[in-house]
Image (cartoon, rainbow, N blue to C red; front, side, top):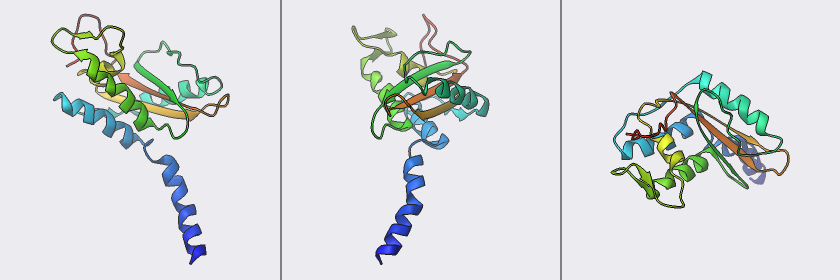
Length: 157
């Protein structure tokens, strides 16, 4: 019986590692935040995802949260332990607490731009990637958005 348990556990490990980091997991987390404000779901874009993956690989050695300055909107995060893609998206969406839609402003000493990118109405295509950093074992997560959002003077939705 213990052999069967070990065998089943061995089969489950790849799923556990992959859990909360799949395309659908990223989409679900983004689309849940978008649904709360009544805007349409995002769809996965493999070109945008390839861009995110290539940039994540470049950051693998240092895990620095430096924006790529590429053609897409972008959110970055890093974390240790079991930091997943879903955790990163949820981290960005917690900024909702500080965002005032009526005035299109963020509370003093807070950041809201990660949240507003997640819910930017015209950003309807998504690609994300997650890599483990070689310098500290942490996880680097990037989500790229097309078309980009966060235009000064415009509301996200």
